[in-house]
Amino acid sequence: MKIKAAVVPEVGADFEVRDDVELHAVGPTDLQIHMVASGICHSDEAIRKGDASLGYPVVLGHEGAGIVEKVGSQVTNFKPGDHVILSFYSDGMCDNCLKGIPTQCRSYAKYNLSGTRADGEDHFQIDGKHVSDMFNQSSFTTTTVVDQRNAVKVDESVDLRKAGPLGCGYVTGSGTVFNTLQPKPGDTIAVFGTGAVGLAAMMAGKISGCIKVIAVDIVPERLKLAQELGATHAINSKEENAVEKIRELTNGYGVDWTVDTTGIPAVIKDSVAALAQGGTCAAIAVTPHLVELSTWNDLCVDDKKVVGVNMGDSIPQVDIPRLIEFNKLGWFDYEKTEKFYDFEDINQANADSVSGKTIKPVLIIDKDYQPEF
Image (cartoon, rainbow, N blue to C red; front, side, top):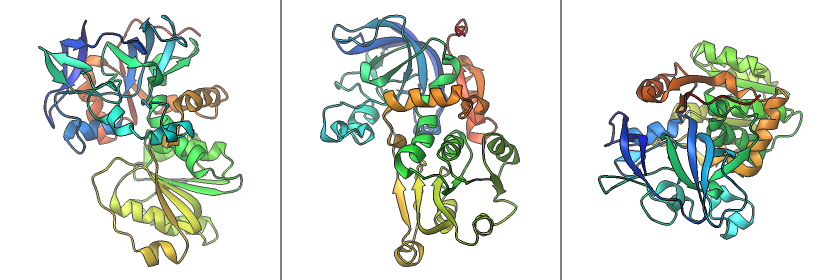
């Protein structure tokens, strides 16, 4: 079937919304999804401009939410009409998946970042020619086909216009804290960069019981929002030395945990320098930059650690429903980071994301959808 999709024809090009994209048929374990909305993530921009590549042309998007239209012959846990949030794909069969770490699936790159479906076939074509996909999903579409393992069923009371980013940005930031760092009540944490991922990490630090949750950014409006969402302190690193201020707030010791979402070498070095003895920095930005750290001076003397985290070490089918419950309690107000855009305005939405004007742009693909409250 032919669908409408936002296609990046070549590296660095703008999105082109086209209605002649051919979609793969529904396979035995697949779901056909009518897309309601999709968040725009900085990973989409990294691939669009060529910092990473899936091959071009490409249909991006990996924070989708929609409604199941069709199911494959072997699907038992979903039915037409189910509301779903889409996330990454893992096979569920390798040793790491069986250990409960699907973000470390042995074939993660093949399934999510090869530009083809998990079975190696084209997800999309134009005039019979290959078009790359993303995350076995590609949510910048009116309709897509995904494996059932890409999908997380949610209650129909969940507003699908707002929920798509739970599948990547929000689960990455929060999962980095909940699943990887695992702070204890009374610990301290600083988050460098208060975009959607950083704010999610910050809210997770608050939920985890950290007594100091420090937001670091250079945009006053973002720091104000961070405090509304639970930051105990906000530091504008353009106006004051973030490391010195963090030490001042922690009796000269530094914090137990830091999260860097910027990928900027100087900021990453600050996120390590701001750690107390024995502290850990989680570096989670998609960036081409290299960072130089001294093994002796930056890490060994104070027993500091730097860890990379993929997708918050999350299990989407477990972690996304948990975030929804936190949201219902008023503890995880992710909607405050979002701004809606029409699907056709995807280039403006992406530009506003890149400039920082909008923290989390969300494309409304089905303008007739109404949530059931």
